[in-house]
Figure (cartoon, rainbow, N blue to C red):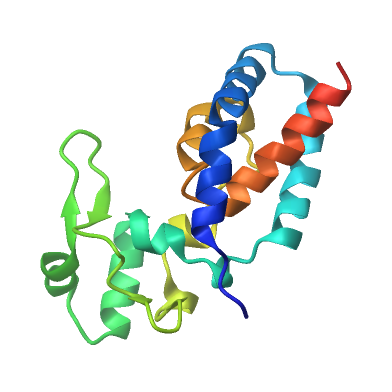
Length: 169
């Protein structure tokens, strides 16, 4: 699969950030009921344009939040104890108590192949990123805004959502 031109998406995101950020904040306040259905369709369209396995930017620039069970499962798979795995790659964020990678890019991201080396065992946070269509959809404006320049799928989905919702107004 051909790699995405992340730079192109990042530039597009920065050009549209002001408009899309204002739209997301308005969406969060007004909570139009049609937006939830529109987001489901927008996400579908985003995945038609963008493939995670042709990108990997999240693995290069962000860190997942790990659950203890995920750490145990992957540590066991790698023949390590929870403590060895944690000490080698993780830390607990003081403010939130979240278990996070110590550094980016992710230790399991194969830069040459552009793929996750532990894809089948990756954390829930990775498996469901960018968390577009979710129950608390209206409360995610800030997260979507932060991810516009990091995740091409988020940018494309929010663009489609904007077009769907704003056309009806």
